[in-house]
Image (spheres, one colour):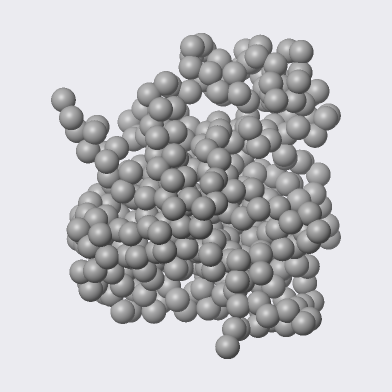
Length: 389
């Protein structure tokens, strides 16, 4: 029997609720103590919830290159936590049994499962914003709630606009792009993209940052969202370019010039472009395309691999903040980050765009799990290539 999600009238909603996600993590860690670790992140949410992740590693005493997977950032995007719980359960069950992982149309051999668990630390944080998820799922709440639950008379904070990367967007972006609504961020409380009173003001954002800091060998990150069938990579502020390194987010000479994207037809588009090292660009696209092909092999849905700004301009996002770390501190390794937007728009049903009927969601879970497993395999191949003379 499908579970009902706290009783939205007439609808069977077998999505995992907040407590079920938490229980799933604890069960996995208790079932596989030899190669999993339950990690409690330090910052309680505004509603005093404790959040946890699970680390999967053949040798828990040794740090290896790390993959961080997060979901449940936006409250109404119910499927992200279900995807990561499924990923975690399949990976750990296969590792324990010395077996393959078989998703319809896509298979990870037992040898590759061993290679993933033996060569990587995989940190799975399925429920970044449990307060918002609980409110969105509750019949007395708001099914389309996006933000966290920071106490306020007008609403919460968009966790994925609260990272310390171009957070003070009026300083960095061209006023014309802001006036035309081409940058998806707001400093007005009550807006869905409200970026908060300060960068990293929110416990949810600080928890993700804490995980990345706790595992300084982090090399890959995926943040799972809905919708649009996209695999996004940096940057999110402006069109990428690889010829003028001086045009970069650290250079104040270009403040108030960012965000005039070519896709929006601005006559002055191109006077600024965010510098992306050509090697990093190539690697980001290569890994993203492998993820795309794995996704497509399951249900035939072909996601588009593109830079984040081609969706819309942004600031304060997880992927850009993560990727910027090695630029701000060259002692840190490069992290290859992605935002996965699963599912497609349903113009006749806005809510179902963000959390599809579960019969559809089950297919999406399979395809995104395949994409994440391929990210791990592609990541191992990238790490091996870095060791070549």
